[in-house]
Amino acid sequence: MDIHDRDSRQQHVGLELTNNVVRRVAASDLTVGPAVVPPEGPHFLYDAAPTLFGQRKGRGPLWIAWDTNLLIDYFNYGEQLWNGESLPDELGSVGEELEGLQVVMGLWVIRDIRFRIPTGVLDDSKRKPLSPERRARRMHAWTEFELALQLVADDEDGWPEPTSLVSGDLIDQLERVPAGNDRRLVEEAIRSGMHVFLTCGKGFLRARSQVENLGLLIASPLDLLEELGAAGALHCLFAPEYAVWPVPDQQRVSHLIQALAEDFE
Image (cartoon, rainbow, N blue to C red; front, side, top):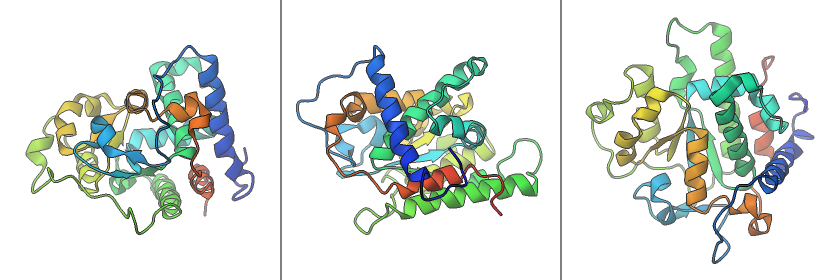
């Protein structure tokens, strides 16, 4: 895959990844419960998955905010993920989570899942201020993710709204989230109406039970796959005949691949 080959080969990479994931699922011993009727799609039924969507009602996209470290991992291993490759064994549990992200990406290609990078990620640094080069790369990725969103946004669903449980100062309600930048990222995700905050950070994950009451699920990629499976949202990977809906605009795949570029100026 050539990350510079915008809008041609890149637009086919997404479906190739999805097909790769389908083959891997078929060759595994994984199973999913039978569906009485084909699940709706590419959108999601909010009422059918309260763990994912809280008290929301109706149907629409699944909104997922990415943690800073997940974006950094994407920079490091995104090309392998899009190519359907396995990651090095020495990555251990991190590699397993990233392969979980790979499956989520394969599902993203054919379902209405919307990835966002919180603006707080742009300057997030635990030790010292980011170099101009690192911040510029994050800003470039943020822009490409937003351009991908513009391809599927419409007047009917618009931008998400926070649940009615969110009001006023959230500081006291987020006391279990690590203080500082981490807490600000979670607060931004809640206030912008995200459904999932995707992370591998143990500090974030320990706060899951507190934050889900505010309409946000903090989950690792493997956690998210488990919840998607419980909601019946993975049938289209186990049995592709369930994917009877039109796939979302595949140009958005090109934008997520372009987010990996280092020489973007």
